[in-house]
Image (cartoon, rainbow, N blue to C red; front, side, top):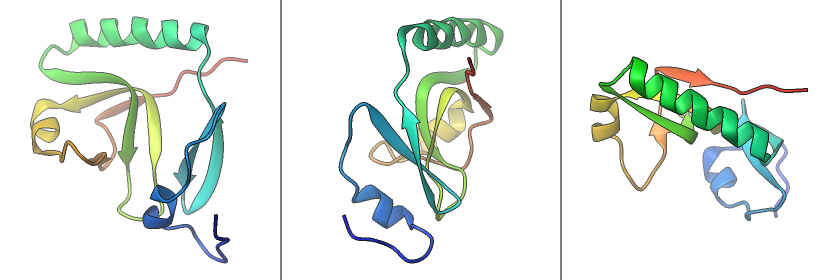
Length: 110
C-alpha cells in the first residue's frame, strides 16, 4: 500500500486490500480501523431492522449499510440504516449510497 502525506481520497480508499478481522472506514480523510461485529451486535442489528421495518413500511431498512456522507474523504458503514425508497431506486447498484442515510443507527456496547 502506498503511503499518503495528506487526506486519503475515496479513490485511494477503494484501492486498499480487504483485511480480517478488521475492516476500514474513511472519516474525514483519515483511515479508521473498525472491528467486525460479534454475534450479540448482529442480533441487536437484526432486532432493530425488524422494528424499523414495521415502523416505517415505505422505507428501505438495511444492516451493515455502506455510504459516503460527503463526496470525498468519507466512507462509513451504518449498523442499521433507513433510506427512502426513491433514493434507493436512484442509487447506482454498483456503488455505495452517496449522502448519509435518512437515519443511521450505530450499535454501541462496552
